Image (cartoon, rainbow, N blue to C red; front, top):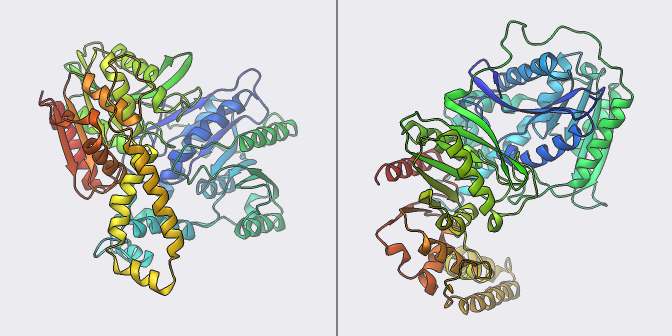
Length: 580
């Protein structure tokens, strides 16, 4: 559904309570910042479904410029996002089971406690790995930009340089997110309110640690001590699990989900049916819901007994060719890394191509077990069915995928005659041998030419035995992989046992329609693909076929994180879609 925000429609997903509602009422999720929102999304969905079974509803609201809501990230500010969340609170109090509890994740914990300090009705806070001070968090975020430019001449070298640019009115682009000067200033100033403003609140503070004997950070312990000293009830719970909010692969923490469920159930047992009455924090004349923004329509469709969630971008009744965007692997969901799929879908819809982007089973907000790209055929078929059901005038469907999803598309597309074209970005062909070859050619060869490497080797900063052992390990893996490169497909419909480089080549060979292959100029996965194409018998001649268009965007990283790269990639895809 969509709620009415001050700037436009806000996408919201409500998990209603199952059975009798709990005395705790409903929770509003206050999401984390930047890419952490993506990485936490599957965990949020798993936790929300678990709480629903306990009679506790959950509202997941995308603030303006984030997730599936309207606007761009650069449009956001701390005050605007807080206003968006207040509208979510108001909706739960009008149409849900009330809202006396907020669930803050990472940086969202600061906003959650700010809202609780302003609203006497909010007397419960569930916090995941809370950040307690904005400036240090923002500094770590800015260091992502510095790390990305270490090898570039004239690259940014300090966080203070970025802050100076922001202070001069420049948007700061980091890992695909454009942070406005207003938001940057907000992040540098925010911190927890005084404990005295939170005495009416009970806090469940949850820390996920890598090992049972690991310790909670001193920063967190100090913040908890300050809350308790100020009269706030705080219960600290430590669980063992991966740091899913910062990892580049999809991980979940079952112990955290169980511990939060138990805390919520205990809290509900000690609560009265309703909190103390207080004036709502959103004016009553605000509309509760809104029409979809920019023609975006949420859809839920079936796949092998599970429910998949997607967003359709409308493009008008005259459209004859539509696009399905399959989410990439890792901890992503349908918005894509730094909302790249939202941006792409909007641009393609503006060119007249309706787009469906969706979550595979077990990813993002979709139900089911996470299966990975090798078993995504049912998901892709269900998505094509869903797009055609919503847009029956379409005559053709094009599949778009990046990385692992590009390879999954190659396994599927030739089996479905409704699929007329493929747009594949940095296809995933990695095996141990492929990775070793890329490392030897594109890492070791470059390191040997760097004076800094030899200085460290001579001075003892690098252990030559460690380097030698690693090189030999990579070389052995490379030689093992080379022995598989001569294989070709058998012609059977069953390609399950083929090595990944051969399986992807065979999928492309069997697909008769137009194909666009878009590669990043500065990406190890793209270079692995290049090496596979050169040295695998099954790939010989495939990229030279007349229906295949190969484009490389020089300097671009794996996800085209800079705005100029996103714009160029979307332009190329749009032009290609309209050219045949």
